[in-house]
Image (cartoon, rainbow, N blue to C red; front, top):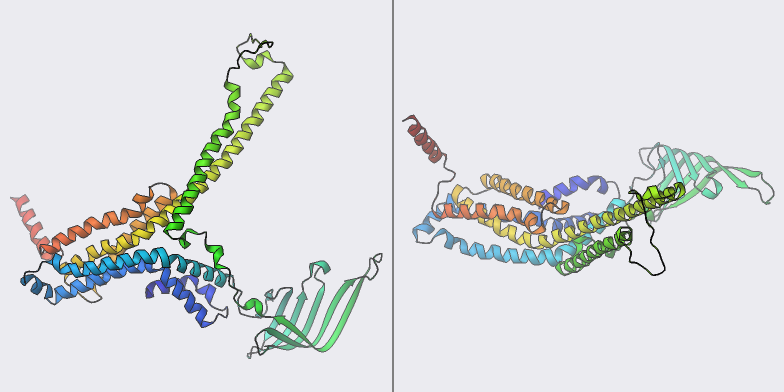
Length: 450
């Protein structure tokens, strides 16, 4: 979890630094981020801990003592299997009940953090628009950060065409005791102000120039405080739903897709009349065309009108079908996202069991405890699991695989490996003994020479 939180900080460090957040805001964001990282951290921790536990038992010859007492490895693994099964059940309830809430709080807070303006107030030599309605430029600051020189303030007013400007040679800026306002006490300056004439028929404007020895400008600092967005606005995202909500909204989206398919047939149906043969009606004599090409029987004006009408109808059908096809693609993507998130509720528990089946026998085979070899082996197998699951999830979202196959393919690949390692460990296999492989290839090469 520590490594994953460091990755989170490296990714969003630019959005956190320099915005004046309180320490508890950052800690709250990291707490929610840790909850969302459980899906990745829990399977890896189960794999690593199982390798370390049984590797330490093998390294200290405790597994040998257990087997000498007549207890098989499978029976010795039963207590840990119960523990991991309990952990897998708890992981399912966590992913169904707690994870959607954590995701909603995490993404809503992260959105507000990223939208927050920088707390660096009035940097040197930069036109700052941090305060609504003003553009302020400070030419230079003293090391104390309060004394400023060459101050320029534009008052932005679209109605007056931004024609109010204040210039000051020096000044001092500070915050009020309640941190609600920034005060600029300016000295030796001038203010230019242009306003329209007092009478409507007078097109000339009034230009006013104020010279001052000292003046004061006050700016509201509330824009630099974080403003929380309503968390309910994020409820429609699939990551914020439990199984019941995913089932309900997924079925609703499927019904929309089915109704869109029926609507496509209704769009084409009115144009089938051009390809049907009308019935004979009394009092109406059908036209007889003596020429093979129907258009040849029409006059030039009728021919142009028929071709124009047909082209317009074709373009109309094409546009309608294109719009409906785009709607169908987006709706089907939403259906796949619901299916992916639905399967994720179960794959976390299955991943804990599958990686335990790999870690426990692997630790008994390599007989190494601690944080050396177990870490290397666990990271390799976890990367295999993570890469396969990521490829499967992407394939499901692209529509190349069914949700059941794409989301469970990593489990289906790792479970046989775990069963194979369990069989080898139960039979005291020397799977990682290089000397046995060397003797095997030596005998093989000897047979070939003979």
